[in-house]
Amino acid sequence: MPRPAAAAARFVVLALLGLALLALAGCAVPVAAGLEETDANRVVVALDQAGIDASKEADPTVEGRFRVTVPRDDAARALATMSDEQLPRTRSRGLLDAADRGQLVPSQAAEQAQLVAGLAGELERTLGNVEGVLSARVHLNLPPRDMLRDGPPAKSSASVLVEHRGTTPPLAAESVQRLVAGGAPSLAANDVVVVFVPHVSRPGGGGSDVGHVGPIAVARSSMTTLKIALASLVLLVLALAAATLGLYAKVARLQREHAESERAKAAGAHGRGAAAGAGPGTLSVRPSPGAQGMGGGVGPGLGPPS
Image 1 (cartoon, one colour):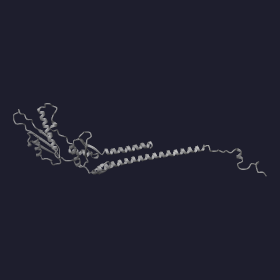
Image 2 (cartoon, helix red, strand yellow; image 1 turned 90 degrees about the vertical axis):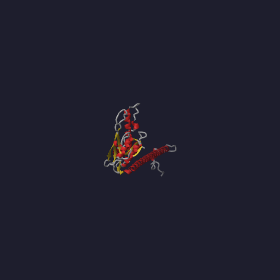
Image 3 (tube, one colour; image 1 turned 45 degrees about the vertical axis):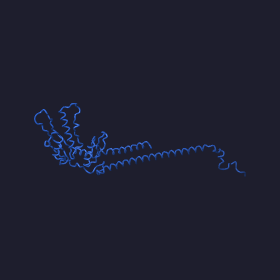
Image 4 (tube, one colour; image 1 turned 180 degrees about the vertical axis):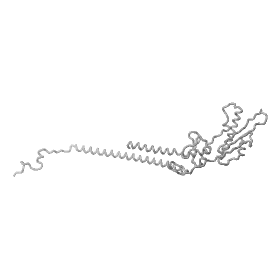
């Protein structure tokens, strides 16, 4: 194959391969990474309810964690949905997380603060796992007991802020009061104040049933099938291009071999003709000048006798 044609063929193959890789790699983008499996499942479920095709896969950058990917065209809607659902949720510190291991002998005030922070974190985790609860904050006021102080002990209290989905709270206020009072020492249920904050999804948050794969509009349920079909088509085009280039190279090679064979035959025939003209059995007769004068008739002095 001539060099310009070979260079053009390589350029076409590389261009098609690059387009195929871009098409396959640009199908999905991550919207959340470094998640625990429970949080990743919660994100996938929320996006699926919003009509977004989301998938969970292992995070290649963090071992043992997961990430969530969505189609590139749905990335903006996915981020908006996650913001509405407050996902992924921040993890509250529990008792073990609040314990200060940096001090060999912590003070009584430090131990009390760690205990209160740990109890509040545990209660926030419990409330946050309730279906329909988007976030929960628990503030505990648990004064330490002073054995040397006379008089009644200081009164404990708590306040709870629960942000939930929809207009109806998923829990009754009395249930939250009993839960918090049961998890904190010397706290009565009547001393727990509960505030519910409804969170209504933004209008149009459900999205449309029509998605786009490049310039092609298609139903969201058929987007994955269409992407697979387009990828298969690109691979088929690559295979046909490779077969065409191979056939072109074979035809060019046969043409070169045929031309070389014809040139070899012509050179052989020319060599045989030259050898035959210079052989020893060939006689060259050249007429003399006197014979040229007698060629057509009888000379004047050599006529027949009378």
